[in-house]
Length: 409
Image 1 (cartoon, rainbow, N blue to C red):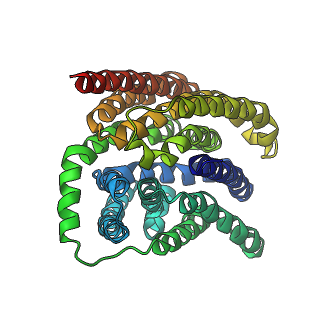
Image 2 (cartoon, rainbow, N blue to C red):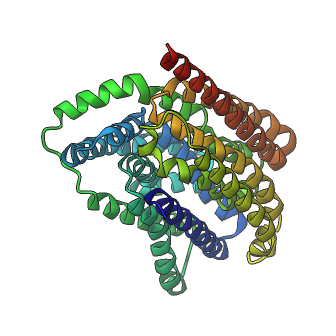
């Protein structure tokens, strides 16, 4: 088996195991919180994750491409060091934004308290983004695999040991433990990459140039698409008297979303190789589609029995997750194409596809959720994922025509 296929198998296995562990973690949390409390936790997490995309400004994605182009270990270590500087600034900005949002919830003291309590652990989404982007560029598939498994595994172990010994377990406890433990583990993995902080001035100059031409394009696209992933979870809370439906929908999202990661695994694993390819190899395309269809089919078969392990009040999550899995499968194929275009610096093409996807999400998260509640949120995922994949595939075809025309000349 080639190195690429071994890495695909490793990351696929880690992502699958991570999905199982996330299910166990959500089961543990829903057992100690009622539906309203769990909904409040997920509502606050959604908003913080939304805010985390605002403070990135494309630097991690620019750094990922520089890492993919680099064949010098010392230079790669300095790129990681520069990105950690940007990460530190982003954490401070996210804390300020989270505090500001919390101040807006004076009429909902239980939510305001959760926002304020999240300040020490709100860095978790940024750490996750840092790992996903830098490990992709560095081809650190082992570390990325560990990042998919170890944080939630450590949380599960601590929760199983600690929860029975606590007299009171509330939303604050769950938020602190879940994001706090996961953050500590990710920090450990990041330290293991041995970033260097010496002579960063030329690295910052390279990052600024790359960000201007590439990263900032993806940033605007990510705001339109990825950040709006959390919008339905926010509007469901705004259009309902409580956050029960937020809990149902976001739980279904957390169960189904790993389906979208699986096709992207191929693109992530081959990202560094894609830099030197003029097109996506046909075997890679076929592997992605086959893996996606198989994963979606197995998920739909198993999700019913899996959800039955939750309290009966969560029974609606199963049908929600089945429909979401179909949408995420289509989205995942688009992500693989995204990785290829990204490795060739086609930031504008990715941005424009993300804009199209984000426009559907914004309209659906407001209009469809207002009209049809959770069903409207699910419809939004299905439509936006289809628009995203079709748009990226068409731009990939145009890219092939452009490059073929240039080479023929």
